[in-house]
Length: 300
Image (tube, rainbow, N blue to C red; front, side, top):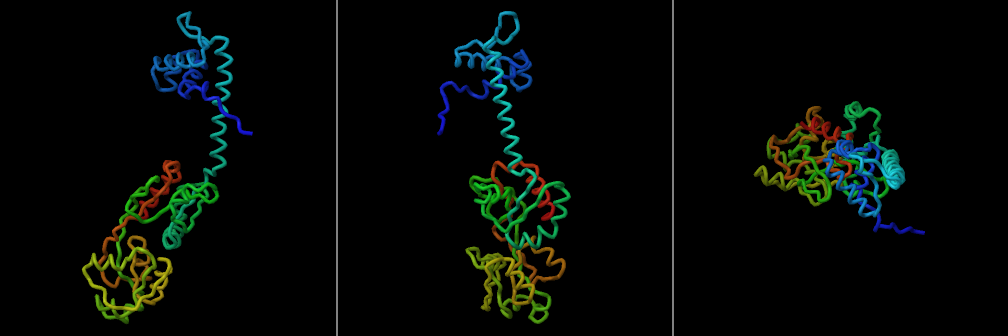
């Protein structure tokens, strides 16, 4: 059976905090110092509380203040209520697995950037269990089941994520790439773009069209190889199946290791940036802030 709360006699929390602090210390000034307000604010809150309850809580006749018999009885219950609230908050934090950080990222970033460098992040977060999943849905940040909820996701966008907090990590750019072996068999420069299949990713974002417009180079006719993920497209590019479109800075380690090489040294802004997105309740968590600092250093 659901019990209806008696809201007509439930005072505002600010009044109760003022009364509890003043009753515990037997001083309006001490209560004001504790709550970072003025003594007159404490006095007004206590008077409002007494008016609401129609009961005197403090005896002010002796130049100071001391609890009345009703005030002492009420203080015991209010203090117990605050203690119960504190215990509820502690239990909620403990049950929420505060020492776990669940990160969502698109598969290429997860497997080629985050996981190979995860020891660096672990060193910055000792005792924290890290989890990396291939999910960039903002809805995952507020799922009802904590076991399915993410603490932060890394994804592309224009910075507008209504209802969420987004912090820019890096601008991204597009550059045509190929395996070193394939490139040795092709003509140099833009002629190479027509000599091998063009690798692309299915979806609404047409990276090749963005690159063509930004570079001023018209794409020649070529066979297309279409994949359902950027990770698969990059694997195909690495294996020499065609010319892919690298995303900087995420492809930087592959370029440094010569797993792929630029076909044309003409990076073009992608029109989007990379963001760390969190729900508002998680944005100030220490683990999330450490993650943000680490990612900014990785992409610098």
